[in-house]
Image (cartoon, rainbow, N blue to C red):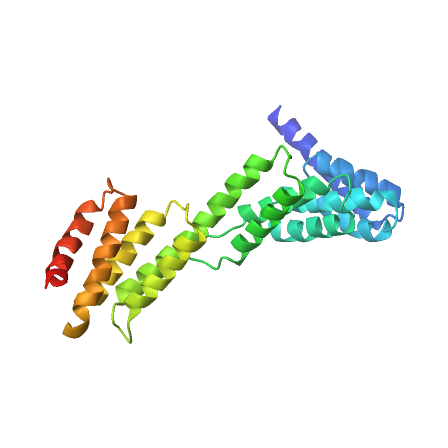
Length: 266
């Protein structure tokens, strides 16, 4: 029984493949159009996109061009090819700003880039592109039923950008005074991240890193500068505990404060 089932499935696959090759060679564009739509419905996204990529040119200036272009983008999206899907979706909403699928095209363009966004330690060009596309979607369609999904994706993407800045700041901190004052660089990177993303979940570790960097900068300063720099450390300490009085890093912050106070009192 299993043998006959395998044979039947093999014959079905050959028949399907044979029809697909026939479609590719056909000059009957309506036939190709209907086949592409059926292929998409059957989740044969590679077949659908291959045929549709020819049809969008053939149907240019006709009513079928709009749906063909949208389905081409969606075929790549469903096949997890988010770079190409984003390109086609952008082409769609640029050519059809008030089209039938414009809302979805704008959403999927951004959400595809979101799904393709790499880990924080890698280049974040795709992350920035995703935020821009999703924000544009929200601006154009503020009442869409996909608003919450887009907003949550943006928050997650922004946190990824902040995490990358936190990692960069930590790297500067770890370098210390190697080939220059890297503590100052750590402070600048962390403070800029806090300014740009004040509600990030990484705000606390960023603020702690600023405190630790200022402490190290003060501790390793020449004597004439220690008092002024430790005053900055004390100010930073109060700012940190005011924002995070129950922080799990409170003990570390308190130890920094105790040392800083000795120099401020002098």
